Image 1 (cartoon, helix red, strand yellow):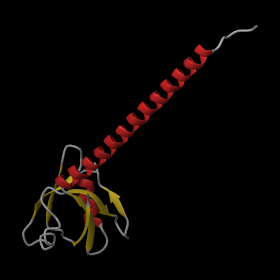
Image 2: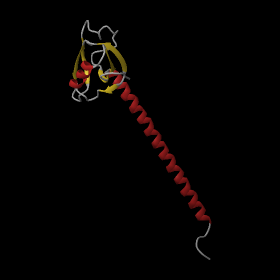
Image 3: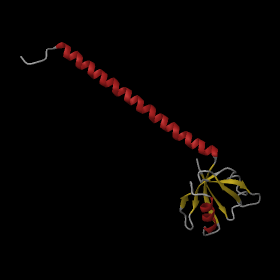
Image 4: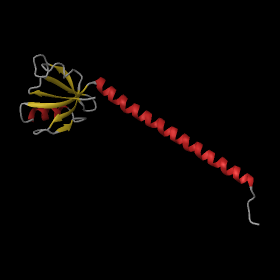
Length: 139
């Protein structure tokens, strides 16, 4: 679903945020560092994670908003920053996989419930058959 790209600063990207506070690539500027990355960064890509201020750690940018993300990129120590990006198509595929998994799990639960119901029904029928054979009560 998502891909990690490391690029030199300044990135050469115009970023914006959507209504959920997720930051996305509004434009890849010609001649910028990201533009020279063989299309690894595309217009519309959502930034899922960003390098921490220093070191190799990453932090989730989901819902963080444009100000926090751009500030994190600006104060990043060193000449490069790593971003985890996801296109709309990759996001759709990721969500489709999740929902497909949920659908398969739901089908298994329904099948298990039907099997349990059949087993209980068979058990009740067997008990009724046994009861019909003999007498109940004390003699």
